[in-house]
Image (cartoon, rainbow, N blue to C red; front, side, top):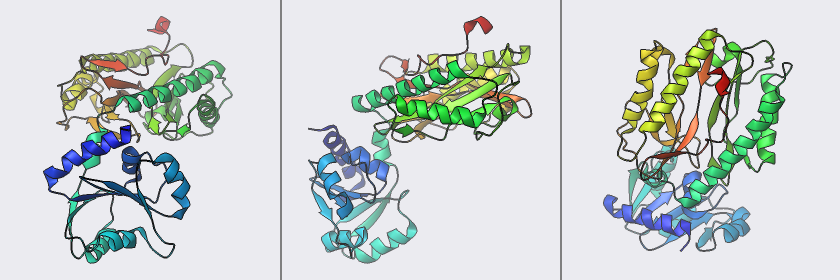
Length: 361
């Protein structure tokens, strides 16, 4: 039994809760999670007894190679995937669930018209409920993703020069991650020097880092489809008292939050641990985003460390912890690591990625 068939079996056990005969999976990320297919323009139709991939002729060979355990239906060049579904299943008096958060209103309406004998049932987050807990295969891929990100960062950390621009650093960092085994980056790298770091999602510019006291790097790699996501704030010269003080607040908040992570804790409670430290330091309004988010096949997944989250942590979840303080016209500090929830607590998957030298702290 493959890891993909195991995932489909888990999904099938959920279908009875919704009284669904078939589930149409159209989100390509979810199709990949359930089948192993890495292409696009392909749907997965799954029932309690079987599953079939619906695609077109461009992917015949790829489907045979990546999904040998799944039957396929290839549409004719004159057909659409919707018309193929309707031709095969339109006469069945069944309840068809579909991913309401991935299907447009136009496609839904066409399905309603075509599946005259069946009933369409909108569902949200069914596959995502499975993806929130990572299996061994996924955790191993995230570890390798983090390792590639670490190698790229170490290279950059050793070659920083005053004449380098933010854009120079981005280009070299992303190249080095690929050399280290990453298939791509998990998101456009954020490289922000000096006051630019006050923007949590700053875009790299042609600003030179020479003369600045800090450099914020937020980056990640993709390995076998799985993302890593890290942030380090680098001291480009001896830090001022203000920079040192703020860095310590952020580091303390991150450490306390990570120490609080364990199964059974609510995500909102973990967010509160870090937020209280930064708020008590007088910078609560300058910590203007959630503490963290899940990572996996997407760079932002469930669960999320935010004050409104009622999600309870379980072993197998992988979540970032990334407190920050951002002050306009001065700069910003963020420290981010990827955390695996274990049966007894947690593991920092990115612990090998260097922080600032302790001599400064």
